[in-house]
Structures are given as structure tokens and as C-alpha cells.
Amino acid sequence: MGIVFAAVKPIRLVRGTRWQDQVQLVDQNTGEPVDLTGIDSLVMSVRAEIDGPVLLQLSLDEGLDVANAAQGLVDIDVSSERTLQFPENDHQRARYGFDALIGRAADEYEPAFSGKVTVLPSYTRPWAET
Image (cartoon, rainbow, N blue to C red; front, side):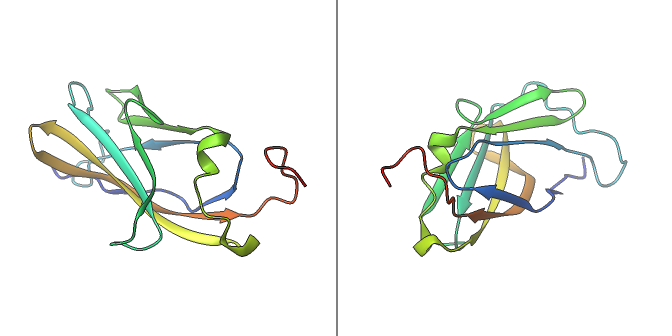
């Protein structure tokens, strides 16, 4: 199989709000959806720099879901509370990178998707005191 590494459209997110998106994984050689039936894992990390600390970690246990395995559809659903894990960044917008890996067998991974997320500060902060 020619694997995917599907590019996700750039995402703009207000810190402290819910992040929902859907990604379709498509084989670059055939144009057909990648069948995700029977995968062992799907993990995604968001970082400011490739070797920087993980700001947000998602998996099938939390934040990622295979919405339709045969069609290669993956849902990203991150709660408002979890997006507060992004640094406040002196109330300036910040751009982060992310990628996801598919695990089909023990210690064997394939690239799934990657992208950029711009996190904007929020003027309205119901989660914090003024």
C-alpha cells in the first residue's frame, strides 16, 4: 500500500474551545480510501518544534476515533478543557505542528496525517477569573 500522510487543512483554534475535525486517509497511489479496519493504534502529537515537548497527545482512547474504517475517516475531537493545555503565549497567536501514526502491528507504524494548528488567545475566558 502506498501510504497516505494526508495533509490536513490549516486549523485555527481559539484556546479553551473545542477542536473538532475529520480527516480522510487516501492511498496516494490508487486514490482509494485507506482501510483502517483492525489497526492496533492511532496516535497524534502536537508540538511547537519537532523536538519540543508534547503539548497535546491524542489516541484512540482520547481525542481520536475511527469514524468509518472502510472509508479511512478519522475524527479529531478535543474538549475545550484539553485545548487549555496549549500555552497562553503572552496572549499572542501561536502555530504548532502535528502528525499522526497508525499502528498495525507491534512496533510497526505508518504515517497517517499531518498539519498545522494556529492557536489564538481568547478575550472571553469563562474558565478563568478576570
